Length: 101
Length: 97
Image (cartoon, rainbow over the protein chains, first blue to last red):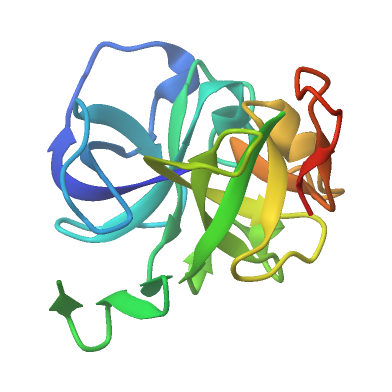
């Protein structure tokens, strides 16, 4: 899994039945130190994430393992909303304090 | 499977139900000598590994098979490395203990 920031939503009226009524969000992948890394993705939201939140996403066929995405044509799913990241003993991100280094 | 070192942890209250009670750890990818690269990912822990440990992990859909709840994860730690013996080493000795 990788970290990402939710940077927008995607609306599509005409789409595969499997992804109808699913919330699609635009996400910017981040390194564990919250630096942008790689291209933006569209992900299906399985946890109720919101704009600007730091989330974890899974890609590939693992993305179909949530209740929301079971048997759907989906290769990227938001499966957790991050509260805290600690790397090498340093708290890189704490949602409750909104500290970002 | 690939080797990595555990360098951090992630806490997430809101997550997929199948991930409740599972530990999410930050891994820095290494080679089999333990030399670290700059790439870091998050993996679910299936073996009880801890900070600083040298581990190996599986990627993609296989990662969700590592846990009985089949969570939506694309990386899972499946072993803690005690030692690696590379046959190319001239004396066949362990390069990591």
